[in-house]
Structure formats: C-alpha cells, structure tokens
Amino acid sequence: MAGETAIDPAALPYRPCVGVVLMNREGLVFAGQRLDTPGAWQMPQGGIDKGEEPLEAALRELGEETGVGPGSVEFLAQTRDWLTYDLPPRLLGKVWNGRFRGQRQIWALFRFHGSDDEVRLDQPHPEFGEWAWMRPADVVERIVPFKRAIYTRVFADFADRLAPG
Image (cartoon, rainbow, N blue to C red; front, side):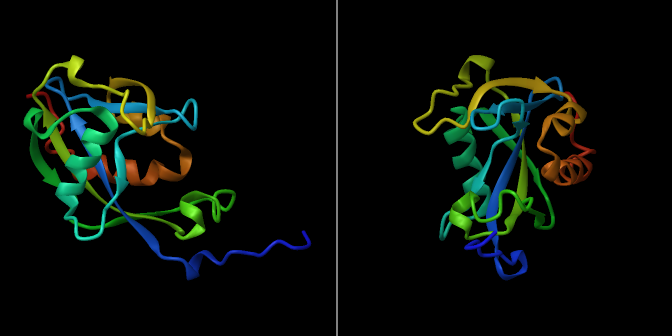
C-alpha cells in the first residue's frame, strides 16, 4: 500500500525478557488467559529492566502478574541458554512500539509452596483475566502459535524437574 514502510525484522533487536514456570505440588504449571487476547493462555513473562539480573526480573514479574511473592516459591532451575522467538509479521511494528523483532528469554522454574488464594490477578497492570493449573502439554496447546516452539523447548529443558513434590 502507498505510504506504508516495510519493517525489516533483521534490523531490529530482540527484547530481553524472562519467563516463569510456576509449578505446584502436583507438578502442574500456572497459566493465565491474556486479557488482550481472549483464548490465549501463557505463563508469566516480561522485560528485564536495565541493571536487573534475570532471576531478580523473574521474581518481580511473577509478583506483578500473579501476586505471588518470593516467600512462597522455591527456585529450582533456569534455562541454560537464551531462547528467542520472532513476532509474526502482523504484529511487527505494533508491539513494544515497533522497537523489537521478538523476544530473547531466560526462563526460571519455581516450585509454589503457597496456597491458591495467594494468586491475585487484580494487580495495578493486570495481564490475565483468569488462571488455572495445567499440564505442560495443555499450556503448549493454548499458547499463541508463534510461541509454541519456545514453550516446548522450556518444558523439555525442565523435564527432569517437572514432577509432583
């Protein structure tokens, strides 16, 4: 179309980000349905602030999106490598003010030792409208398609630790 500028994704950087796998005693993981994308479920995730370490960012994002504090979780593992995904063309230039081509993520696995009533979605900047404990395969099935490969990789990386306990 006239007047449109094509965005070259290769010219854009990846947004540094963390993701959180929060596992309960039964070995199920937390997933929230996004307020901005009904039907799309995902695990908590968000950007890493300048000067912030990934684990510190993971605990902050967990609290901001679920209300769960660090006293209710036990850190078990994090992905060894940064994992990346690209935004689909329809979202390029729209998400994150068009500054990024996708995300570069470190994922952290935590065991939740609290009770379900500690989960509070009514945060100052809510991301999720509802939440559930799910099997990893169900979370992969319900995530937006362009993030499926990342979720599959994360669950494979943590497979030896994803168990009741």
